[in-house]
Every structure is written in C-alpha cells, then in structure tokens.
Image (cartoon, rainbow, N blue to C red):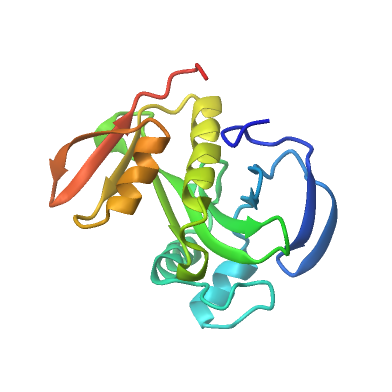
Length: 190
C-alpha cells in the first residue's frame, strides 16, 4: 500500500493519547507507512491550550501552529475541525510520539467543496518526509470525501513547504495576500 492511501485495518504500535497501542488500527484512523493521523481529542486540545506536557509528545510539540489549532478547536467544539476532514495529529508508528499536526479546512473562497491543506512537523522531525506522507494521506481523505479543489498557501521563503505541495501534485496559481497559493483539482482518480 502506498504512502498516499489511508490505511484501513493496519497495525499500530506505540501510543495514542497516552494509551499503549498494539492492535489493529480502527478504520477511522488514517495512516501512512510511518505515521498515524488520529483526530485531535478534547483532552489533547485542552492540554495544549493549558500548556500541559504529555508523555507521548515529542519534546518540541506543540509548535505555535499546534497551539493555534488547539485554541480554534476549544472555541468551537461542534465545528468542522473535529470532523473527518478536520484537524489531525501526526503520530509516529514507531514509538507513538506526537510530532505535529495536519488537517483539511473548508476553503469557501476557492469553491463550495474546496478544502485547504495545512500541516506542521516539529523541528526535531523535519527532513524525514513526514509532511509529504501526511499530505498524501490527507489528499486521499479529500478525494474519498469528494472535496475539490485542494488548495494551500505558503509564506514566502519556505521552499521546503513548496516542495511538499509539488510532490503531491499541487501547482502554484499565484499570490494572494502575500502568500503563494497552490491548487490541485482532486477528482476521484488515483
């Protein structure tokens, strides 16, 4: 199974939300070869907002983007951030450490079924291809949900993030509000 597929029924090792896992992944936890992408839980969001450390977090999690996501989730407990196309944690299969976050967000300015891809990997885990792996899993989720187009924005001076988007097939479309915009018409193909 390729990195772009959402694994259904694979095996997980490590921890999710502090609970030791050595069992089949439930169908609701998309995963790639090295990462699991469970949804945020209210407990994780509350811990991030409160500044509480958890044993299953990498030493540099949460990053600033994760704190922003936690505050958004805490403010809107019934909002889209909690859904299938919402915010997810990046959890290493080997060891179970939380190493970042990623998600798909409604992007109504780009179309009624458009979603925006966002992701962040903690500095200690960058350069390992985790952002590409997470982006591929989320692309598969968007495709399965019929969401299209997939869009993203990259701040100037971040060529690594531009390469992540290009590796999943996204192309630059111009600049909006000083941010380089990327787009991929998702469709239902592979």
